[in-house]
Length: 183
Length: 354
Image 1 (cartoon, rainbow over the protein chains, first blue to last red):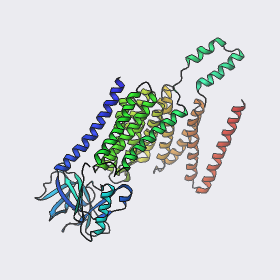
Image 2 (cartoon, rainbow over the protein chains, first blue to last red):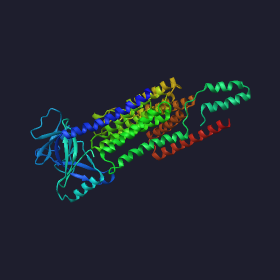
Image 3 (cartoon, helix red, strand yellow):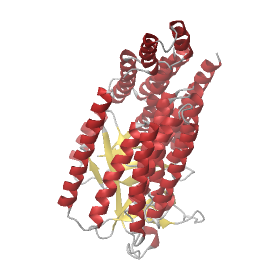
Image 4 (cartoon, rainbow over the protein chains, first blue to last red):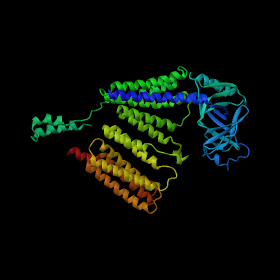
């Protein structure tokens, strides 16, 4: 009898932890600050194998900052600074440590930035998001929109929580916004 | 291979026929010998089938993107997990192998559920954290249900998690912290407590891999000497296990510790030891010879085999150090291997004829 109780208690605890994780993430995603980041490249091959889109956040290095000489661009930084620019946010720098106060309108996200070899003045952002999972219908619609967009930028809609973590809310491709839902 | 009781039955019949043992003592002697439950082929196949069914269930949930909504997929995978756990609870003590298998299945499903949950709800996370969380969950199920199967799953997941670390590729060595070596120690303790030989095998193997991953951090100084020191550590463990052998799982731990000690000692010698290399090679040959002698003395074939393999490797390393070409070394090693095989066959024939 004790064995039965122990097994069921362990299983119940594990289910509660997983459900709690999903609810906590959903609350944090809903309550976070929304930013739109341009997606530099989308690899549509993954749509056919696992119904997800590989995301790469690539941005310009701000004026006055050299990739070679700047400490925070060597893969050691903890935060990425994003600055509002029109209807989107752009890379504004990196920050080491937790004491930095971002300027008005800026958002700090946990992650790091790395200069892209072979692409002068370009930086890749690693903010913990690298793919967007979608149902097959959604995936095919995104793929079709990507083919039609003709230079129209694609965006990832990201929620930045109080903990500084970036959580994906959806994609905006060709003016069409696809958001994550429970269904 | 016949078990000890079957061999004893044959021996008893022979001794009774020769008048060495009274016939009326036969049943009493056999009754005094207890053997652990033997797993027959059908049970083993059923266990493998259950594990494959778990993987199939996970693949089914992962594949049905269109047919099942997100929340439905999440509920389905949790239901499959709960069904496996409830089945294990129902089997309980009455069907221990079934309960053990179902808990291992539940552990696999839960580990997959972690990955699927991240996928279903687009929750970002690194693979190492997911694998370690799965390993801890399997450990909890193992402790809750006294399941060696779930404990083995836990060790496997933590082991995979060790290699999913970015620091293992030299990216961030300062962030590396290894779990497997500690999990393996806990696994050895549980194997002893539960008298589980399968778990003892898994935990011993995990200990060797855990020690290697613990040491093999990029840019670590004097890594060769640390490997050699760890080899001595495993040799001490082997000696301790031999001292308390054949109690419970000690013989299994001794066997793996001998293999691990020789492996770590050998690997350590390929670092830049300068003049110490000669000492290392001499000690390697002596240790290999000692292991062969130990295996023959204790009649432990796999320990003798460890000594033979180590001796061949040591001789090969010495030949390489002397500057012989790879082809010459390969030829000499092949000759050693043939000689070992011939001696083995001769010994076996003599034993069979005796």
